[in-house]
Amino acid sequence: MPKRILQGTVVSNKGDRTVIVKVERRLMHPVYKKFITTSKKYAAHDQENRSQEGDQVKIRECQPVSKRKFFEVVYDEVAQV
Image (cartoon, rainbow, N blue to C red; front, side, top):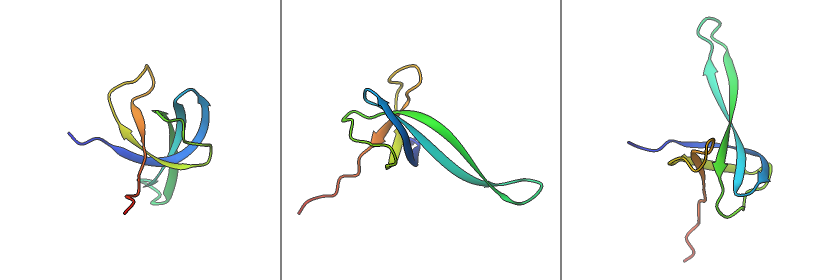
C-alpha cells in the first residue's frame, strides 16, 4: 500500500525531533459549490532537526514513532554532479 505524502508549512519546532506541520486542502462545498480551505495539523518526526518555522516541507506516512507521530519529514536532496 503506498504511503501518503502531504505538503504543508511548519508552524512549530519546539519539540526535540518533532515539528508540527499545517496541511491545507481546498475542497468544494457540496451545496453552495464554493471552494473552502480546510487545514489540519500533523505532528511529524524530524530526525535531523533541520526544519524551521515557516518552512514548506513534505511529510510521509510511516509507522508510529510515538502516540501522536505517524509522519516523518522527507528531505528532497538535489543530486550533486
